Image (cartoon, rainbow, N blue to C red; front, side, top):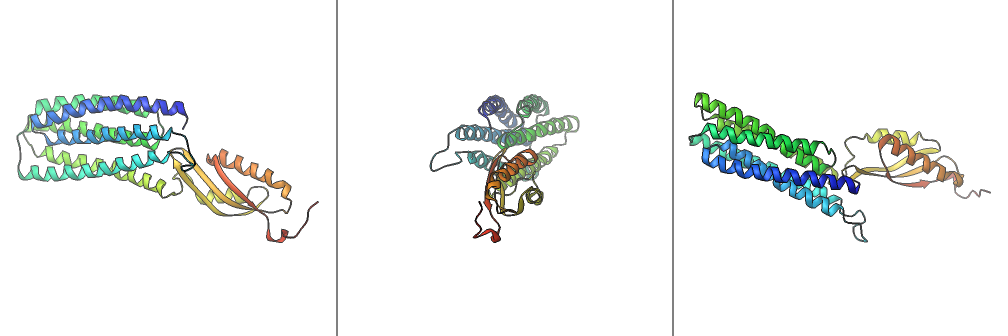
Length: 293
């Protein structure tokens, strides 16, 4: 990621952090005052949003540090570790919400629906603004993680407003813990996806947008290539993918190797957006002992 892109991400994350933190405090206090577990669940979700954004900011800071003799790729993987932590905290939060909801079924509490609805509406507006700020930058897995957090909060705020309306019109308070469990399911969905993507990168799995068989086929059908083996494609950080392979050439003419390498690199960059490529050329077995003039 270019320095100017990281600077834009940092500004977006700082603005979102300010909005989320203010609304989190308002919703948490409002949840206690109104007796709404759903409102507190939404505030708890916003707490993880704040943590996730702080982690994202730390990851951006580490990623901008240069590589050294020990960490030859620099600190790019800090972004992935932060994303993994974000996903885990989401799942833990969902478990807490479900436990609280079950207790609320056992011991129903009175709910003040009017302020509950007003506070949720304020949270909804703040979440929509945050989504716009994060979405316009597109980008990294970390930014996507923050976006998923806020998206979950947006859906939660809508649900809280609906629940407050039901309590206000009918007095049916079980809707509050029911909605809390629904919020927990949304949180789990976001968290599991984020954990899965982060773990795939840490395990150096093939990037989801690439078909390894297709990459292999295109390399082996390139001019001058006999076969390819030991092919590996993995992700270092968001938008930063690497490929390494051994390429057996058809000809014993060593002078063509540089031309073959240039062709492969150009094809991999154009068709698969693979710019960090390491290729080792191997000559056919029958070329051993042949002297070329």
